[in-house]
Length: 166
Image 1 (cartoon, helix red, strand yellow):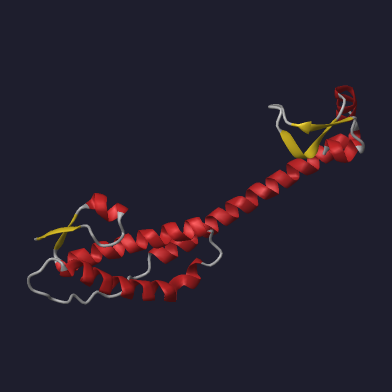
Image 2: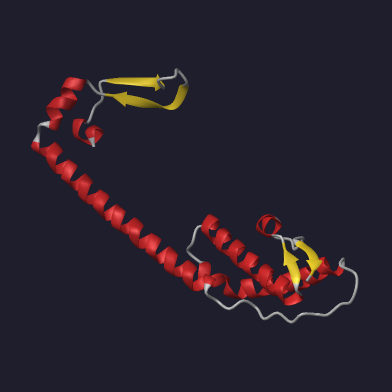
């Protein structure tokens, strides 16, 4: 705003306060010129426009946040893929294979519902997908009657949280 109203700068500096060289110069204005400018009507109008713009930007951010919450709520309320337990007697080593089998079903389901998350940032999207994968993993483990170690369930995401049969 100052630059637009004062037009020309009084000095240029190519280093920051720490003395590091900058790729673009910093434009400096005399304090007296700035103080004079702040008393003008043009500055007051520019300041009002900046405040109004700030209010609009805040409303836009709030609208965006509300939309993200609605989108995530709708996505996380979806019914997960149906789990059809496969009964295998004996070796607990089959747990990882069984989990991978169900995980493939989950990824297919996730691909079908992927458009619901369009428009969300990658970070928000991945967090939502992670929460649903964890929820699905819990459902699979309950369907097989496996115990869930919550610490590993939160961390691994690869189905290695099973410990013992109930």
